[in-house]
Length: 63
Image (cartoon, rainbow, N blue to C red; front, top):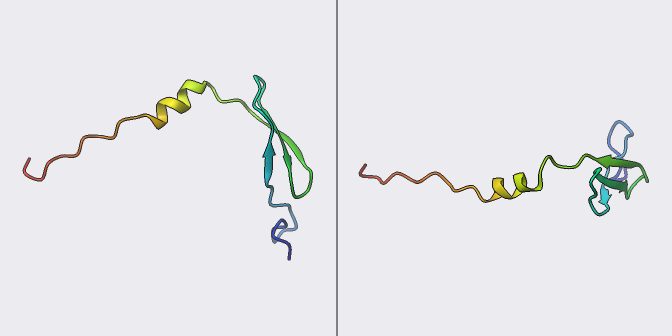
């Protein structure tokens, strides 16, 4: 059985993404050739703020 086909006979998509645009990102499956568009993120700054969040301060063992 091919790795690109699931048990149900459907493609296990491997998306090749184009450059993102204001209306989303176009993608093509490298296995079956299907096309789809991924919606744009709400705000590019949201992604940056999530990855830069500070971790909660660890409590010392004596406190």
